[in-house]
Length: 436
Image (tube, rainbow, N blue to C red):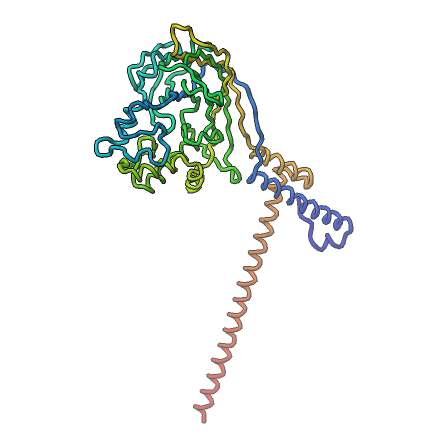
């Protein structure tokens, strides 16, 4: 492909028409190519849904909290007369000289053997002697102000049995029969939270951020629950910022950030404050510090104001467990007031992920189609066009350089001639001077 000389183009009408059409096509193509690059650098997202049949399933973590959470009959030992711990003067007469807050929470909450009689996971029984790890389950405990001492069961293996035998099974102790208040809510039983290992059970119970599934098991009740797994994946963009780290959790990030700020405010901590690793404070040992620390922890207003100082974006990947109660009945009278709880799953997993709506392959296809359709350019012709452009550029550069060198040489010649004429005139002047 050759370029048409400028004079010939404007003298012949057919060449001029071709030039105008080519010029307009080039402008239109440039606009289209610009839009393609804009879509490539700022791509839209599409949602892709799929159903997967797994050969095995890793079960969620279970956090189990007893109701009621505290042994209120032990309160007078520590100088507490009110059964509610969130009142302003509950710890007014607490004996800080003999006991610490850790002593109080360890003594007045229920330990592992007081809650669980038997635990099984994936057809492997586990007779609990306390916290720790077995072959299939890791057990940890944590203190929560309203929930007392809670126990978290984290599975260490997957289960390939999709029935009651392949899931969780709990036999839990209780010493009180079910009582229902005026609102119809039982005060005796257990709260069971299904969550991902990265999620945290917070004080706000805001399921928007921690994706908790909560079940209430009454005392002397036999409950059997089936759950399904829903996985969601997002793509981090400038408009929707998220963290792609699979170990990251927004709820845990906010929980630790808020707890750290409250602990820094009073320069002390409490057993129910979960702090980041490496951050430590002395335990609160005065009435006023304990009073205001508890006030800030349980206040939703304080939580919302403090959490604004935290940089905790959403996670890009998270898992939600949706439960369905299959059977719910009273246990046999010989087991009352203890409770039974079974949790199992199917092998069907629902997955929803975001994919880029415009990638590099589509960019190359659109750019190539625009160049080929409007300008008739292929890869070979594009190479030839680049050769023509470079050839013209080099000719222009070298021609200008040649003109510059020619001008310099002409100036040197003129200067030499003027210098010779000056020497000739000086010599004539000297000869005349000698003669006279």
